[in-house]
Length: 187
Image 1 (cartoon, helix red, strand yellow):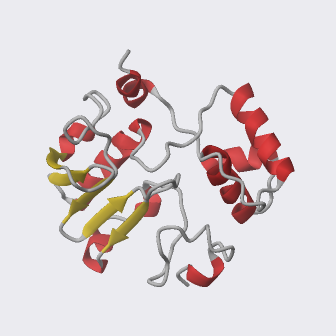
Image 2 (cartoon, helix red, strand yellow):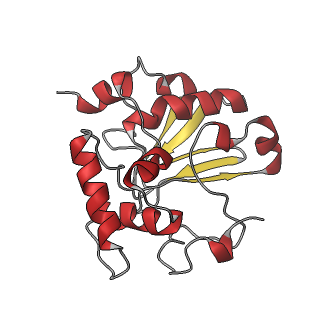
């Protein structure tokens, strides 16, 4: 019954930093890997089982759900809207998972009171505008925000989103590498 619309209008996001602190996971890289692989039901032998179990217990006990996989989560739409507003962007092009469908979406559509944003009948998997790309890569649980320097001067994504800086050598699946962030993080 319009679950995505309900989540968008009334949901309260919980930061992963908070969850990590609550389960007592001192290492961000191991925590991020556990969140990702347990969400996509992947096991590449790299998950710390104690972190995975504590994470599962905490989510269940606090009635929290995992991040969305490879798409814009409804709960994040209002934040994306505020970010676009800060950048001075009035409309974006939304893309579906395979980037074969697109739609022009007004930034106002991301407000909490509006229905969840779609590209035709599909979830949003990427948003683009001149100088900006937000993309939710396939089988991953995070977005990549790519911005030109002039856009970065208008609004700092860290004021809107939780994340890490990645440099120009990073690719969309940098968690997969086993090097996690170190080699690809911006200084």
